[in-house]
Amino acid sequence: MAVPLGAGLAFLTLLAVAAGDASPAVASAAGGATPAGVHGPAGGGSGSQSSVGEPVLPGLVRNGPLNVAVSHFGKASSAPAMPALGKLQPADLFVVAPTTLSPALSTAVRRLPGVTAALPLDAARIDMDGNLTATLGVDPAAFRVFAAGPTARAAGLWQNVAAGGVAMSYTMGKLDRVPMGRDVRVTGRKVEELPLAGLGTVGIGGVDAVVSDAVARSLGMPAGNAIVISAPHADLSTLMRRIKKVLPKGAAIAPLVAQASSGVAAATGSAGTAGATGSAGLSESQLIRFLTAAESRLGMPYVWGAAGPFQFDCSGLVQWSMAQAGVVMPRVAADQALTGPLVPVSELAAGDLLFYHTDPTAPGYISHVAIYLGGGKMLQAPEPGLDVEVVPASFGSEFAGAIRVDPAVAAAVAGDPAG
Image (cartoon, rainbow, N blue to C red; front, side):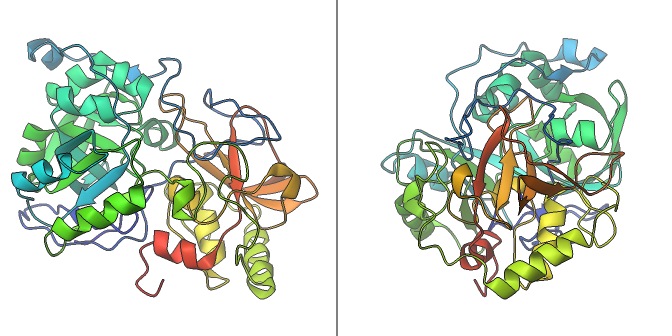
């Protein structure tokens, strides 16, 4: 069963593991579960600070309060003690393939200029409580340094993963209302009941669950078919070209952050780093159709992971509304933040996208998107229990920045072959 992946893993194909199927099929790269949002100017996290004049998009802030929810279950005491946390490694690039990648490939990638770490992983979409969920199989002790700071520091969560539990992202747990203290029904090669290790977003866009590599084997996930790469000081465009030369057929690579040199919104820095001037942007016709479509959804309910036409989460609303204008968009907010140049607040125009940090377990992660309507108003799908609404635009501490969508860039980020 082929299913798409979103948020930060644009251009990639992950595998969906169906019950009884040890040879899952390759998926496309158009959708995925979405980090959802805030209601008006309020939010659920302690986002990075940015002034109204200098929004930062998307932040690489990896420090913050420890708001990770950790479960307590008996198996954790039998697992080996989690070693001390090493130096955090930013997750900058992600490689994935339909089958196992050669260990020599990870070695070759580590030797490339600018690469500080490259860790093999397992990657697939797994049915968890009825939701197809982008999942990583990892060595918890080795992988946690790639997670967002608060999640990485939650040793208990990783101890639970090592003991056979499944860690879910903060957004999935809170917005899909997954209760703590119970098992999660997981359908892989067979149906298993896995204890919930805790809620903490790892900070790799679109990934909403992490299990140990041993559990991944039991579920039928492909072994070592992905690599997470840290290269914080490298030019990612140049590095990606070098890595592509050594990738086998069927493997793909994508950035997990943006850089000013890539021509899209800067990952860090002040407004205007990438430069909004001269961007193609939406045509007048596209802009009208986009905004008309979005406004036609007012009053429709928020549902986590929904992308229309009658239920939406925050990025699902943006993707659906853009589709009505003929614009191909990636599925999740973290990817949508890469679809055009950064726009200063003073230059905002109707149709620009506003982004927010609302996840306390990954304070630098883009977890909410809204549509600027002009006149200080924004349209959004806010959170469970609320409907698509128009509210005053928020530029408080959780505001991460704004971009103006370029259709060509959006299609490329979404992995559309025509883009």
